[in-house]
Length: 250
Image (cartoon, rainbow, N blue to C red):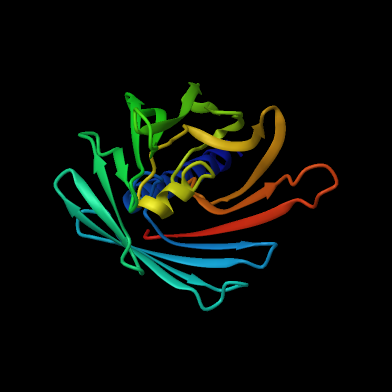
């Protein structure tokens, strides 16, 4: 009986070791997986299907967007062209933004098609503030709108702008990543995100009132396969629901 128990234990240990070894040999993780498609749908009938193409340096080369719901027939793209410490983003209508990046490869400044420009201030790897400069006719000829970020335990605790304060709850057991609710829009707009949290957000509150809730389907490597975003439309309103489905290169 003792020998039988020992053999069972050794076989179980061997299976676990092989599984761990295979997982390591595949080299698949959140850090080295790149999103290659995002399928977005919502309860209002909108559907957008994004395809992401990368260059030889693992930078986003282009983002192709096809409408498939109430916006069927819409076809768009963003083409990204890199040059030293900046890159351009050109859409299907030939409108372009110029994005400067710093030595840590973070977005530093965004020069829009118009005369607006946005610059970021960081505290190490964490975004400290996003500052949008809009031209005005009187001195100092620019009006600056500032959004400040504060952190707790590596997560964005609060986002404060004029008249609006967002706060978040997190699931400490799940790792933050490019497909999370704080980063995915930035990624689809610029090919990279300027915000980051160590964990996945579960709820967002606006001025103390619950505004959004997030649900996730996570694969065996900790990557988001699907994110469901429920949006509060206020008292008596029907909550909107949006779905994000992700595909990866590995």
